[in-house]
Length: 393
Image (cartoon, rainbow, N blue to C red; front, side, top):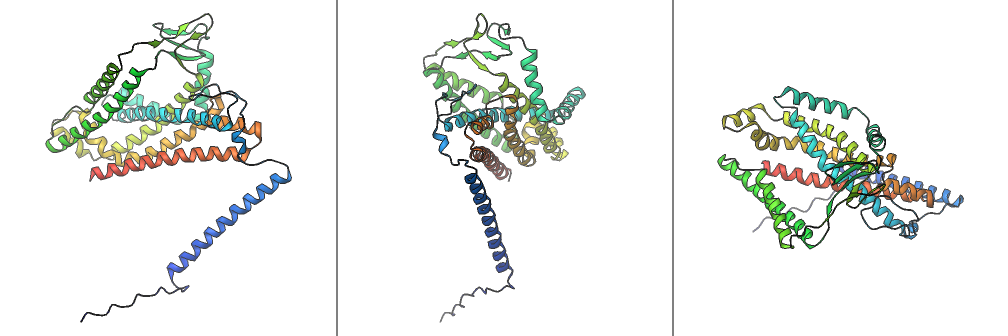
């Protein structure tokens, strides 16, 4: 005869219960937040109604009526406001993505250079960090913009490199290939090469951990990516047509160009943020016990191999969380580009506010854009951090 199961214990709703009190406090907090949000929204709507101020997001479907000097997607002044915001978002992402890549490369190089056996290299890296991180980012943006627009020659007399690249107050002009099937297949080949290079690096690291044999972790992956791109280019007919800039009477025609505003924003953000990234990398390397380097030396690894294969992989657990913060700071600091006239999402929002008077709506759009980009960056870095922690175990 089986034993009778004990009846399920009822949860007593008593104020003496800690869990019940915690639940009540949370409900009160949520109710208070909802009440405050309702009060602010109602008060704002009422004040706008009394003053005859229109509200709503219907203006996004109206023609914008203004031009944008730098666009990545097709845009005309007769296009609606939502497309103008899309152009601003594309310009913001352009600065953020390129800036994150360059910041990571420069910051890592400077951070590693702080541990160089060469006193000159250590001193230069230290001076770079102390100089750029202690000057406000806005001043750096203004400085680079003034240098590009005041010290460079006029567009009619640009600095030329081999007659292919021109630099002047009008920006940097350079040749680009005429896009076609061959270039598209070359890009696809490069993407396939990146996947193959990642697989090779993973295999080479596993072989190193299992046998101690060092395989190429940089040059061979680079050759794989380049070879895949060349194969794609050959499969597309090996097109060799280029759009080459040339100096006309008063301006440079043809090719593709980077505006002084974009160059100034990119230089300011990258050099400023890279100084903080260098300190993040330095602290991560310093957290690895010195015995690891001694063990690597006993195995016959060179200092460069020790840094790439032993120290940096272990330092990632310390580097990644603060590095994420620096990526977020770079993206959010790009909003300062409005000070030098770069048409990012903040600049587009200011123009839309002046023309429509929908300040709350435009500011809400900008907040949503930066919140989305920040959460996406944070989520991706957290995923990579967890993946690195699992591999380390």
